[in-house]
Image (cartoon, rainbow, N blue to C red; front, side):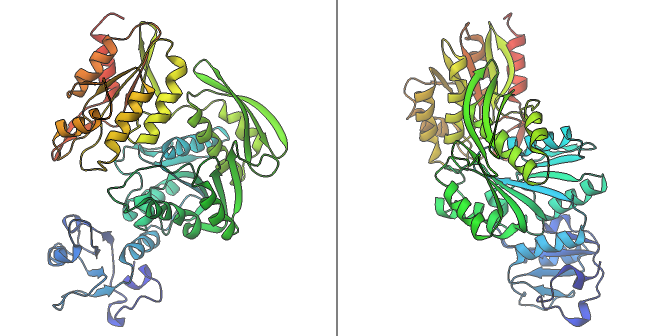
Amino acid sequence: MRLRELFSDDVAIDPRAETVAVSGLAVDSRAVKRGDLFFALAGAKTDGMRFIDQAIKSGAVAIAGEHAPPAELSVPFVPLQNPRRALALAAARFYPRQPATIAAVTGTSGKTSVAAFTRQIWERLGFNAASVGTIGVVSPKRNVYGSLTTPDPVALQRSLDELAGDGVTHLALEASSHGLDQFRLDGVRISAAGFTNLSRDHMDYHPDVAHYLAAKLRLFTDLVRDDGVAVVAADHDASKAVIDASRARKLHLMTVGHAGDGAGEGIRLIETAIDGFGQKLTIEHSGRTRALRLPLVGEFQIENALVAAGLAIGTGSAADDVFAALEHLEGAKGRLELVGERRGAPIFVDYAHKPDALAKALQALRPYAKRKLVVVFGAGGDRDAGKRPLMGEIAAQNADSVIITDDNPRSENPAAIRAAILAASRGAKEIGDRAEAIRTAVEGLQAGDALLVAGKGHETGQIVGDRTLPFSDHDAVAAALASRVA
């Protein structure tokens, strides 16, 4: 592809450089290959402009960035007003194929489940569907584990191009606040946008909640197509802002939840009842009342499932078929996942690593604990320290037995992280070794108890210092169960 073809007409490129052949895009100078266009982006820790010489030595044929370097370069330089957005749009031009129908979902909690549920609904309706997000790429032909909720634009657009090449027509995509704020999804042709909820998270990145919400709103104000659909969980404080933004864009709006408008295009939840490890629902859509059984634990999963249903209906699927598909949903890996039992006490693994998510998970499991509700959790290092006492308080209020352990301490002192949680969780037990903490909790279970192991969910590593050590909550539970006769 020629250099000129990667940018919009308002980007100034020296006419002599417009025909330079570009064979790849790079944002990491260490990954530059011969023929690449290197984007020198400013980051939180360093500035890509420092690595221009290294990129050129590795074979970069052009450099793009916000400010031209002081010394003349041996390759063309493309000045950009918004380098991150320009990168995303260039990646979309370089990898032009995308699934025809793309639904993106944002919110503090529930993104992974909504994306997985939407994919499952489409699959059941006969579409070639995939999802991209925290647990990676899931599609009929490839499952690739991921570490970022929203990948960098080059990796994302490459994935979309490959999925389209595999014949995927329907894609559910998680949209994180970081990804939206950093323009990673610009260039993605989004047919429908979903919103779950907003609570405290990523305060190590966003200066305040208003900035956090503004990042989420970009999905509705800037990215979804003009003729697109907005599906909004309506039962939360931030819901009105999302609804107002969607109406201002004149998007096709569907609300979901107790506050949903079942008489219109929305889905209103009328009644729920626990039914074993599932739930019976009565809902209203387009003036018609329906009863169904959702095979998932937790009221918050009802909302996630209905947002997914709204995204499927909003992108053209028949409501009757969509609601029938809800009865066959499987939870996303590590999302309130039943992984075993001891003495009849169920054991669940959940990704909850923020205050609101931990509260929801514990409240969802309370009906299954006739005796004691036990929780094992910790908090990540180098992240929002303010949530640690909040999570400790939530655990003390919602569980009967609390064990505080380590969860990706990164560069921080693990004992200091645990101490911050323990200060607000009176009566909690401290066991730093996560495998030992899980083993202790499992061995202590009695009939009538329920155990939640929270924080890591699907993850298969424990980040200590600058190393990622192999660790899985699933494996730790299995090992604990195998070491004793239940």
